[in-house]
View 1 (cartoon, rainbow, N blue to C red):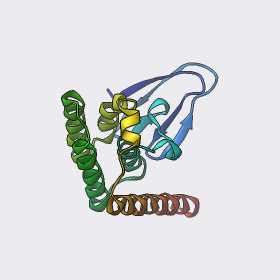
View 2 (cartoon, one colour):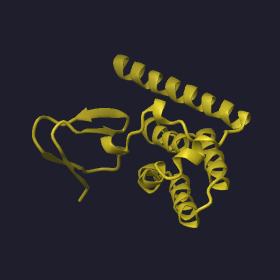
View 3 (tube, rainbow, N blue to C red):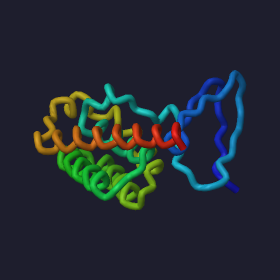
View 4 (cartoon, helix red, strand yellow):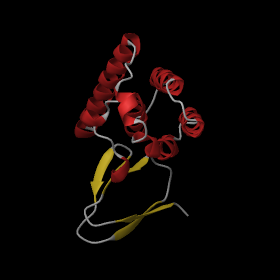
Length: 160
């Protein structure tokens, strides 16, 4: 049996990079084979990725949506290490480590579910945490690579 999703009216999900929107009624769908699935409530918009933990979450979200190569995975690992060094709560650190284990297993959905509760914790302190310029440059290169990958996939589908 596959993954069963109960969708509320007009709820959005992302399946293998495609955005799907439910109709006006509740529905249940089953994903019968493996696919990268992300419920709308877990989607973080780029403009909301302002703190280090949110940048990490957004990076993992993009790995799930667009696919992943070793360079992208290394970037997520570096960002995760940076976030870890700035966390003070042991439980939060444990959750982050579990999420990063899931990232290394390429189970991005489980990583996002583990990180989601941490998005609101320590918001003020995190906003004051400056990301090193080297990591920020890598972050921008990562997002450019993801954008390029998404564009090329769209072009392949259009001409496929």
